[in-house]
Amino acid sequence: MSDPQNSSQPGMPRRDFVRSAAIAAAGITIVPRHVLGKGQTAPSDLVNVAGVGIGGMGRSNMTALASQNIVALCDIDWGFASKGYDGIPQQVAAMEKRLAEANPAPSAEQKQNALTQITNLKLLSEKAGKATRYVDYREMLEKQKDIDAVMIATPDHTHALIATAAMSMGKHVYVQKPLAWSVEECRALARKAEDKKLVTQMGNQGHSTDNARLVNEYIQSGTIGEVREVHIWTNRPYAYWPQGIPRPAPMKAADGNASQPWNLKHVMDTLGDALEKVPHSVPDKLAWDLFLGPAPQVDYHPVYHPFNWRGWCDWGVGAIGDMGAHLIDHPFWALDLGYPTTVETQSTPYNKQTYPAATTTYYEFPARGSMPPVRISWYDGGLLPPKVEDLGEEEFDKGGGVLYVGSKGKLLHGTYAQNPRLLPKKFADSTPKPAEKFKRITTSHEMNWIEAIKGKAETTSPFSYAAKLTEVMLLGVVALNAGKKIQYDGANMKIPNAPQAEQFLKRQFRQGWSLS
Image (cartoon, rainbow, N blue to C red; front, top):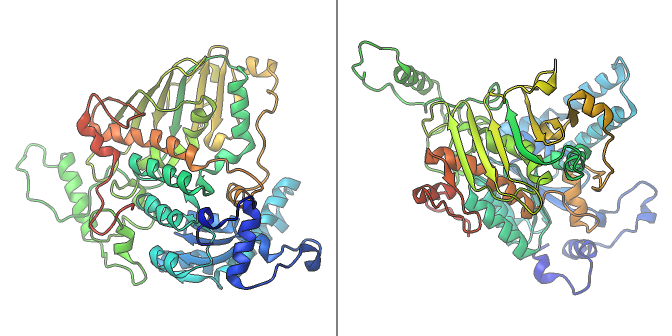
């Protein structure tokens, strides 16, 4: 489709328009479902999907979308991305073997989930081989005229650029979390989505789960009373990617501190020198300048890409940007939090090249209607909140979780809202589950987006919601860079007590790159 906002006929449902426009562009005839036979899907019922950043998490997203028409795939590193697709037959064979030999036998639900994954992988393997391949998303959008929707799973710093370009051409977009690298970009994406009236979704898949809705029902039913305090934690980046390390660089001259020759500075300089000596020519199939995109010019090194970019300030937004979308999401939604009034981040040493090894961030949110003010405490890098007596012999899951402290009791759940449960045990045993008030999502998070494009559903994490959530997450990074507790005027995107810190709400784009 070119631009559904300008091209759709008055009164025509979006689903019908998607179908009609795609058919007109391709010059084909609608094939009714009854002609194909039971269980078959007419081509006109499918959305033409392109993927940008299709390795790693992007491949997982494309697997979930494999029932649709996969018309184009774009990646700046086909050497890395191709491995995930070339290995699908072996992965499917291994999954089928595990399923057949499972002891004890999986539950019916587990078996169905495994079979769905196997089916989707087979579909993706077939369709990816036929899709047109690109390296530069701009070329793809310019040349490929049959794209209806774009899945974006690139490094954080290019999310906003690609999504803006796609939406400007009338494409629906699915963007991996975090929505963007900066607060300014979040707001720009929300405005663009609203202006173009497009279907959008951020890739915080836990938002579509039944457990996420159960958390809302516990909180909003008043089961645990008034909530004024929330603790959130994750073990990222620990054991996942490095942070708090120096850039690869030749050893600097000795600083002359003979009494402490192996102080922290010297150790970091030595580490940077050792990294510099690692061979780091640009891989043949990596378009490094396109990887950099709007970020400053930096020479390639394998400590940056793939995956480790999350911990580097030029491209990622650290643990709070990575996992906040799966953890902060739930209290932000259930407590209807909006913008905080103050944010303060404390950390281990921070060199402003990589994020610190560990941080704590404290948010103060104002009262909302009848709900009281809330203080949220965030911990990463393996840090945990103080253990509460109500846990008894249980320990906090070091991988991550959320603890809501209410006036009547506590609610605890894991990452993605997994396993929500009340504390203490006596309170849990005597308290029934709240009534279901939130509609459950029966598809994957990705297919919820597709169903919304077809006019059959609404997305659970559209940019109108995801932009504000991501902004709250990124304010933790802003406070880290400010080096002090900031007061935040969310309505005007201002920091009254530290105006100089407002520079951290935006990014300076490298020449040749812009959101416009």
